[in-house]
Amino acid sequence: MDGSRWISGRWMMTGSLALLVWGGPMQAEEYIPPERMENDPQVQLWRKRQQAESEARQKQLQDEAETSRRTGERLQQTLREEEEARQRVLEEKARLDRQKEEVFRGWLERLAAAIGEGRKEDAARYYREAVAVLPTDKRLAGLQERIAKMREPEPPSPPPSPSPDPSPWPDPKRFEPASTTGNAFGKGTEWGWKSLPEGGRLPLIPAIEEEARKAKAAKSGTPPPCWDKPGKQANECIDSRTGMEFVWVPGGTFRMGAPEDRSGPEVALKGFWLGKYEVTQGQWQGVMGNNPSGFKKGAGFPVESVSWNEIQGFLDKLNGSGKRQFELPTEAQWEYAARDGGRDILYPWGDEDPVCRKGVRNGAKFDDNKDCDDTGTEPVGSYAASPNLGLYDMAGNVWEWTCSRWESPYDMEYKKCADWEIFSSNRVYRGGSWRNSPAGVRSAYRSRYDPDDRFDNLGFRLSRTGP
Image (cartoon, one colour):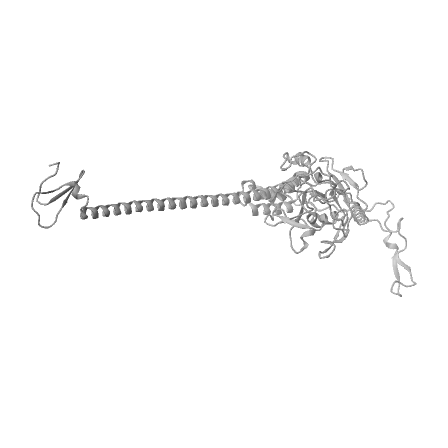
């Protein structure tokens, strides 16, 4: 009957669903039609239970899927963070390796020069320094044995025997009482040379005579002879290889720091040569063969975006294997020059604050807004020269590296250059830049960067020690 079956019990049918429900005493072969099943309480209860179980199962599956998704995201995030950390470690290791390689190459170059010049003691010291940086480098192979085989420098030959020609030196036999009228203490005998050579003083050994002349020139402000091509002024000299112009800065004593509080140390300096302008992009390109500047505007613009360590490579190439004559100025030298020879002034031109952020240019204040916007560097010489020394761009254009290690408060580091191999210490920079306010371009303002830092408002100028 309509597909139903007859058994002892009750078949309930609805559509294709057949359900055998056992109940109490019933007559066999009882048939319940589908329409009666829709309202049967037992069927309705069963359906509700089935629906609740289905919904619970579906929600469980959704929760499991969401948990799995979140776990996967957390795992991916963890993997990304671990990869980023690994990359940072590798980058830092690579940076340190590059620094070590630069320092190592510097010692190797010094070592090669010492071996070539027969300076055994210096060669041994440079070898030890190189081993301390990269002890297992193959480039060190055989160098120790080569240094050991070097001959000690021969002692200087004895001075020639006295010439029979007349000597400017007085005869020792004539060292006798010059007078018996009393000495500076009021009694006794005054001893001395009875006669002196022409000029009234004893002659000096030529080397000592030259050093004395240089010291006198440094103290008096008279520049020593130019080592290359004389400049337009008597205190200027031009390096013909690079075209860099240098100005002689006479020695003197001054107090570092802001003139109004005079909190810095008092410093005595010998005279020195200092770059008339900042080093240009063209000059860097001529020595290094590249231009790292952010503002590639032309050869006459200051080179910037160079780190302190990169400048050491520039100096090594510029100086060659001989005496290191070109150098960054010390912090004390820079401030002394920026204050126009140690004068108690706020800026290279005096105490008057600049109208615009760029300071003073070509000897006059900026007077229209188009010259005041922060558009980057200007050609060297665009900012006014100091009245006495004639140094340009000491305030504005680009910050300038010094060779000194940062110490705060002042230590003795301001008077000397930091060792290149100490690459973990900050280095001092001075002078303000094209984007600084008047406070930032004051001659006494000082700050520091890591020797590997480079920025598009940070450059340098050079000093030179002796002819």
